[in-house]
Structure formats: structure tokens, C-alpha cells
Image (cartoon, rainbow, N blue to C red; front, side):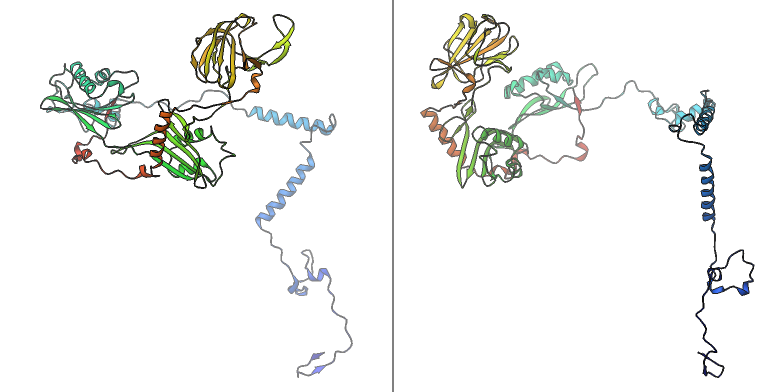
Length: 544
């Protein structure tokens, strides 16, 4: 159907099939000579070639041509063929080019040295620090004039501030002399200090602030204007010059000796929990070692338990802190103490609340060497026949110390046939131990010995093929296998000691947790008048 110019629809004359176009009719070919008017402009697609696409096409064609030449074949294949020989020629050619381009080893000429005359030299010197050291005689801006007069001698500083350190094995007077103090004043100051405190009580490493004044003439040492140091934790000693005389001024320091009590819940880690509530690291480690002698830290302590420790603790009004030994250790479970240990006596051993010493497990190894022969039947290395070996043999060098297995009393010390030099110690519970083949005995008959005490030295006396220790154990006089015995020893307090022990334990348990961490009130004796900024000494010269 179509419309005429009057807008009326008319039927097409005849039936026409749908239009079908070929590819040539849709896309115009560049070589087609058909006039542009006969081409379908609505379906024409223009081809636009950019510089990059042209370069890519050129590179692709060049690569294909070079690949077709096959200049560098794989020399591991077809060995001996013409293709392989061509590859060898290519390799030799490239190697020759590389060798030909190898750089030479001829010297390279440097730029000629700059000519420096007197004018240039003076200009360089004027820009250096050297003119100041030479009195500015070579500078452009600070040259000497006729008004400059040389001094006969350089003036000395009116005062020297030093810090001297008392070294280990050093004497107080020798330390003063080394710092520049005259011999007479050094003896006088040493006598004054010795009258206030024993000189041996001054620990090595103590630092002494010394102020030396102006001297009258260059041939005499500087006089001491002031001297001060921390003699003890609770004492500051100072020496001052007043009206031309040296005067000792002891200055006591207020010290609070309240023990530090730390208590908290074990949680995931006893160490971290104790550190979190303020316990010093050394005290926590000592606490773990102490309770570890009585309890298994992995099995016997749970996260819900509480730790309780009391530490010897001192605080000075000047701000210093001195942490002492652990004096009380406890484990609390369900608000009841499961374990209580307190340090008591001159030896500083720990005892439980019942007055029993801390448990000491098993026997001390008599020597550090390995076991070379065990208890049982064996062929004797000297006698040549089988017989009972009634102990343990430990390998050890000649002269190695031998330790007592546990506390006891020596009931034999001397020569004993094939045992050579022999020591037998009687222990509690009907047990005894014997030590044979010693080179030298260090105990006597009837002497009391402690666990770990040296009783002799390894040797090879008696029937022995070399230095070693033969170690035996007896129960009620009968020899037994030493490896089968593992017993516990404890110290016991007497009745009088037990009463004193319980009194101290009660006094410690009344200490409040954290009381030692409360801020100390200021010490009126430590107040000082304000010092002018110009008089403050920021840096002191140190004397080694």
C-alpha cells in the first residue's frame, strides 16, 4: 500500500518480494569503481587508521619476517644439521660483536688541578674555623689590629663542677685525688666521711658531686668548695666550705619502710596478673620459684585462685624506691589460704604457716657427669669376673667437686680398701649415702653437712681404672639401688622459734594491700630555696 499526492491509499501494482541486499551492497569496497551516487551512503563504514595501529601492523609484519628467517634456532636440537650450524654461526657472530664492544682499561684523564695562589688560599682560610683558633690572623673580617695585646696566660675558670664515681675496689681518698682534690684536703674529707659512716658501707658505683673553687696560684691544686653524695638510702652527706673551713653536713632522708603487699586473681597468667597490679618483675619471679617448690604451677593453681605476696619495700622522700626480697607468698582458694610461706631466720629460708621449712625434692646429683655404670651384676674391669655392682658410677674429670645428696652427718671419712678415699653420710629415715674413689676429702668424721655442700673431689683412688665417682646408698645398713630413692627433706623450727615465727606472720598479714603505693608527704628538710637559672649547673664534667 502507498499514498498518492492526494493522500489516498492505493494498492501496489503487483506483489513484490522483500528486499534482499548482498554484502557488497551493504559495505562499499575501496576498489569498487561504482560511482558514489550509486552506493548506499547509509550503510557505508569508514575505515580510520591511526598512527599506533599502523605501527602495530608494521611491527607484526617485521616480527613474522624475522621469525621466518630462524636466525637463532635451539642449539640443543638437531645437532649437526644445517639449521643447527646456522645457529652456531649466529652465536659466534654475536659473541664477536660483544667482545669488540668490550670497554678498554686505559686510564681516564681527570680534570686538571685547580691553581691555588695566595689570594685564593687566603679566601679559603677566611671561610674556615681556623682563623678563630689562630687569633683571626688569616680572616677577611676579623684581622688583628694594633689594639690587640697578647695575654701572659689564659685565665682559669673560677669554678669546676665534676662528677666522680667510686669504682669497685677503689678507695674514697684515691677517688678524690683522681678528681683533682689536693692530698691534704682529700685526707681531711675522707676522715670526716669516715666519722659519719663506715667507708666500706659506701657501695661501688656511687657518684660524688664535687665543686672545685678558684686557686690562688697555678702551682697548687684547686680547693674544694662543696661535695655531696648519697651515702645510704636514708642519708645524704655533704661537705661545704664555711668561713674558709670544710664542714660536714649530714642530711637524713625520710624513708617509709611499709612492705608492699600485692594481691589479685591468677586469671590466664599469674605473672601478667601480678605485674598488672604493680608487683616488681623480680619479686614475681621469686614468688613463682618459691611456691613452685610446694605446688605444681600448671596443675595445682587455677584461674580463679588468688595470689598474695608481700615484698620488702622502702621509699625515700626524694622519690627513690628500693625493692627488697620476697618475704611472704600465699595462694588463696575460696577465701582460705591453700599455701602460706614466710621468710624467717638469718639464712632467709621459707617456712610454712605450721613452721615447716619449704620442701626440697629428691637428692642432689653428687657430680654433674653422666652415669657410666648402673646398679646390678657386671664384669669387674680390674678383677675380671662378674660380681654385684652396688652403686652408680658417674663420669667426671679429676678434681670435680662432689656434693652431698642431702642433709646429714658424716659417719665415715677416710681410706676404705678398694673404695679408696671414701665418705659415708647418715641421713634421716635410716638412709645413708657413700662416695668412693675421691682424690681429696673435704669433710671430717662427725661433721654435719647440708644438701649440696662440697664433701670432696673426684679422683681414682682404690680399685679404679680412671677418675670417676662411685656413689652408693644404704637403707638400714643394706645396699640399695640409688636410682630408686627420691625423698623429701624439710627444716623444722624449735618451740621458741615457732612462737616468734607466728608473731611475725600475724604482723605481716595485717599489712594492707597497696598501702606502700600511697604518695609520701613531702619532707620539710628536703625543701630548698629556688636557684637562679644562671646558677643552675646543667652539665658536670665526669671524672673516670
